[in-house]
Length: 286
Length: 287
Image (cartoon, rainbow over all chains, first blue to last red; front, top):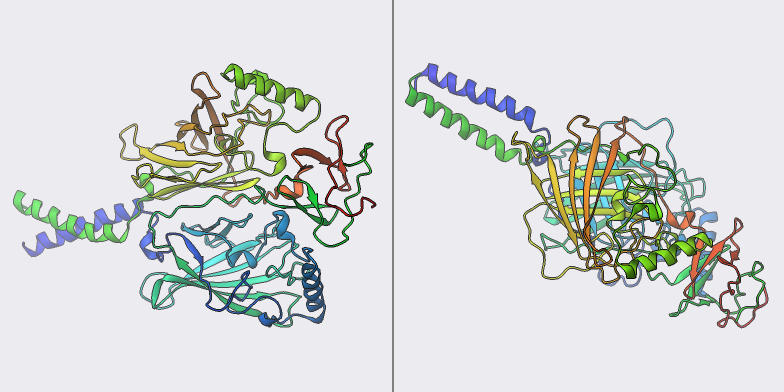
């Protein structure tokens, strides 16, 4: 091939490449492979319901930097739970745990990456999220939600030309929310800010790390924990459909929690709990 | 450049492009642009809650091709609704509508197209995350039944312009209870429903999406086909509302009966003469 022909070849390739680049708007090879189903990795020796810091047991062992007021709420919640009540635990009636607790996560998680949004799809109560990566600023007004409003930024920390870390900030919350099942509270002012750094473990691409820092008025300082998720080896995972209302054995009437028996009848959750007020019925209960 | 040289140059160019092509695995321009927020398209003259067939009045006006047995169930349900009792629509119990009612889009809808899966997100009662698998898979030997079912799809380039324009979907493996819409038009309790969809953009209006749905179900005497349409929001950053059923519901199921809740949260009868719930498990019936 002559020099002139070589230039022609390169020019042709370049022209075709430009056309192709225009056509291929989403270069997914720039993003990490986070496909598949992810689950919380159990920590050996840590049993029972997962704590917010999954490396420690629930309750005081979490060593959460709570303000005295928040600590009192948690202790009252755990005391009520010890008697059979629900304490400061709104999730039992199928209210979403909200952020940051939803990232524990309790069910299967799928992460769907598009250039504009990273979707975190969670099979639990009502936990899925959108993380906007389209470069938007914080909106002037945000309708508060339990999941909050998340803006993310992809980062190539090792400079290999491929993003490896998703940095996320989440604001715009409502309540009630708790860190975990003990009812360890987030503040009722809902001014929480959650910062996340999500990446794959460099030594094992089937392990994902989520370093979560929570800034909240219930805390004396920012609280950072790292959650670890494991990838399901099945490339076609069986997605379990979770419907919280289906078979939920709890109801709440005027702020009081009750169990439902196997036949669906009301039952007390603690000794000597009074039954609900039936003032609107003109017949006596059975 | 001679002919042979030209072919050689073209081959080299293609080789270079193959390298580029490997890096760019997903040609999203091959797929229709379904990005954004979609809401149920308004139908002229339609009033009241949305029906399964948006082109017809709700309830009996739907003219659903029900078998006599399921027509009787539907009529009984309408009488209950007229008496003020929540009917067979599972929503008041915070159970999801399931397919095919999911695609009525009672709340805004997002469609995420990737080569292997098309995701449909609708936050209504259950936070629906339909997965339509387009990776060429066949039906699995065993599927755990779900309200949304298990969906396999296929992209089609109908007009041969090199770009997909129609997503054909088949959905099976359901559980219940499910109804077609809020009037309680029932699906069969055997849950052997098959739902076929053809989802495509309007040729004249790229902000209008159509879904031709055909439902095959043992509650029906023949397949029932309807056409649903969705309108794309003009705002590319439209807000996604959070729908928390437990905070909205005004009813409660206790002991197989449905009761209402008044504004202050007290239990109320849902129908005339309804007995209060049993308090047999309480040591004292005094409040």
